[in-house]
Length: 330
Image 1 (tube, rainbow, N blue to C red):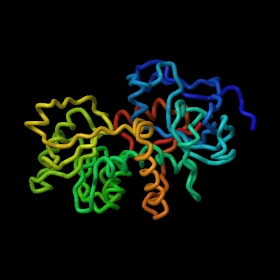
Image 2: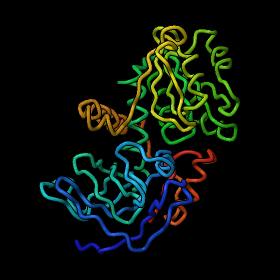
Image 3: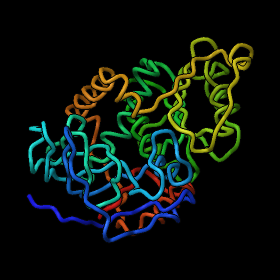
């Protein structure tokens, strides 16, 4: 299948935030390398990581100028050497650099088929939000039925997935979200919803748990909320799985672990999990497939915007005014 030499894409021109994104009409179409497939993008997922990369270059990240985005879904239109599956014409979702564009190269081995009966855009989150939530809850967080979990940013894409999964596994869910999003989180099954903008959540969480604290915290808030996450985890057995830092860096010292917060603090980076522990990631994806077959993992319904609206969409995500999964359509 012939592909054009150039494409429309959103290029990050500097590290000055979402406003530094520029829609360009002539970005080069990538060629699939060995072990890769090229997809014609039907929708790209927007994640808070995109906001972070618009302001700071983390280890391994591209430097400006670069085509932004890393999650997309679409049709396989070309394959690199050594690739026989997925075949041309297959609809897949996956992770690769430069997703805010009309074409994207993906590792073939990590391309996930769009489930039968799902629209392409509904599959966004299958390789980012749902695996992150499941990994944080089970292999990292060791959640068991009857335990209590605090989930920060519960109205976001990963947060919503975590609420659904935690309830499926029999947990009591305390969710934190801004006031305008409480109805959304409650509808997902959260047992209690707290105001994330209300400062320190330590008091409300301790009151809800009779002073015991929670067994597990899914920590993505960062900043000042990190201290509250440590404070509400049950001493000795409590776990805090950190997979985001939307509110900025937070500091934890060895003295703090010994004398203030005797809890398990676990870092989760999905890219590192895929690269360094593929067996665990494979188990997570196998569990997600079973959950999809059982109807627990349901098609998403992302808020869809044109590619040209990318700067505005990322700015809204940064301002915490969005709910659920967001998508850009080229």
